[in-house]
Length: 484
Figure (cartoon, rainbow, N blue to C red):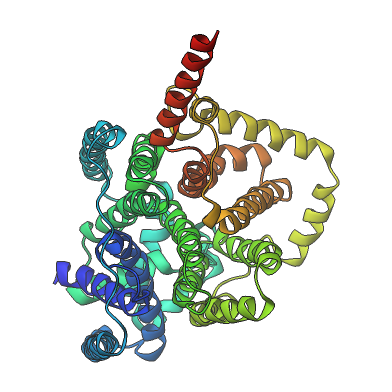
């Protein structure tokens, strides 16, 4: 029952993605991307359905489990029928592209990547065994709320009482509801579930950044980005802490990847935008920062894509994005307005304090100094990774693919808006500023880290391109010397 409770959401997510995925694309190169996306989409749907089930069957967890099992069987039959009809109706997909050459940088990077992957998995398991309940926020917020949802029955809304205000009862429920749903299927609580959910999100993030860059640029670029992410100690530590920052970072990355893949499709195919709307909605169902991300996504796409696309095409794309977003966003709005306690940032006293602090120049200096220090030493690396990436960029040069430049521009705008939004949240924070920055800034930057790596490795030259440029430069120098 444990593995069935975890497998069924992934099964649903994968088949839903398979139905939506463009048929003219070859299947095998995108299989890893689809599998990684299925982790977030499947667990998001399971969390969403469990929350709605609590409202419909508050007195009986058995009633919810039976209803979900029946729905799963019906949903599976419907998906299989749709898949069969689509295969009959649509033309066969193009053959898969030829695999990349096994020479050069790919083979050099392949072994270190898989060694780092195995080492990260081992480290993750040891960290989970050492702290089976997770870090402070893991057991004091997310897992505690999952236990409330699982144990409380008809009184499940009491978990959002002001009596436990220290546990942020207004936080969204993707992680707690996904864990509680698994426990409801098993019939009892087990520490394995939150640990496995955390592991799925962490390594699905690695798989997604590797597979997407392998498609969008080259396998060597995917190996490099995966190595950097796996080699970030804080990423593995936070993944094993059973908190929501790594899952949130997954949904950020998934949304941006889907935008890049969508912009390579014909203008009349908008299926991936519906998936992007869904993953953006799930980010808002994961943590408050997801609401800021959603607003920044809309602003960045609107500001960039409306200039490079026909207005009718843009409106059809916006409708497809909204179709995937609407069900999840409606649930988030219902939760925030009808169940959760008010957030301290948007309460009336909080707004008054925020306005006063926006005009306090010393707060900007304090936050800016903390940001500069954290960005230099972020990730718990023994040296400054930021400086290393700058040096790498100067060494290999910049050469983004022309086909992804519009999506690249909107992604850069999106990340800049997010960073600016995070900065202003600190400036207006109602809590002690030093404590707030010290306890959360590294986690906020970690949320953006996979997406920043994706954009970075989309911009810079691949190792193959860098070597070709170096070889061409050497030949030109030799030719000039011979001419002299």
